[in-house]
Length: 356
Image 1: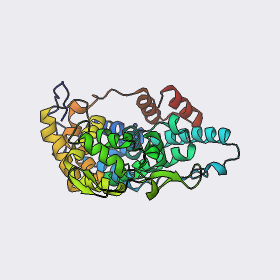
Image 2 (image 1 turned 90 degrees about the vertical axis):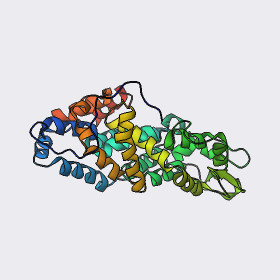
Image 3 (image 1 turned 30 degrees about the vertical axis):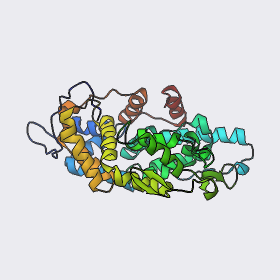
Image 4 (image 1 turned 180 degrees about the vertical axis):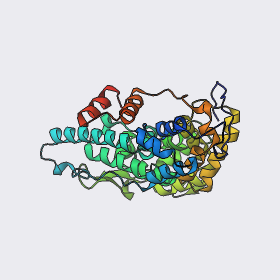
């Protein structure tokens, strides 16, 4: 597993943080939570958290993220091309509207917004490639739905989303000409990490199993599976041979490489929420136990995240203020903590100027 050159100064473990005289529960730690698990909070919210234990505070934030409904479907969210009156004009307007909606969601949703932002940078797509407002909404909806859900289900769903099928060429992956782009990124970026216990043959065979998602009922509709363009025949993936399809790939991946997946995802989440610095001590005392929790929970994210966020390691003073924030983070945090008035125009300006 890759490690960074710097040695972390944070030697605390995943033992739950319990305040005591020399390490009290205070506004500094509450701000730390709100800034990492969201984009800051008002003074009233910070004061209210003082009356809770750290354990209950984290439980409340996680449960809020689990319970929060996804953003309502816009009237155009499941449009096909034929539903537009003036496609070029309306499509562009709906894209801009949804960017603003996303900004409003992120600034108000605490942990769910923070995680949705993380996953959209993990299961990354490019709007400039598909440039279609309904696919943008559908991709965002999946990111919200599974932000703190089951990671295996997340992987399964995002791979056959229309945005992803276009961005990583899945819609071009056929039995006549298999395209390996998504199979490679599925392992290299999304689940295992680069070069981590998969082979070029695994990628080639996986690409064949992922064929068939090439057709839509009409332009702009979701892509659907069609056996006519699927490679019908045995494929061998991670030593397992069978006439595999898409769902089989996901099942085999999580059965045969669970430890690698969990370690890769926990490492990325650690770097996002705690620190970029990871050494052998962090791996042994933090990453590996978190990965085991994720596997034991059958890839439900909440138990592992609770374990991290409640820990002495997360609340260690050497974990405070060590993440360099993006301009987007700084501005969103400023808005929430200052309680300054903001509107859609400000959100639009923020999204453009920060290249969010």
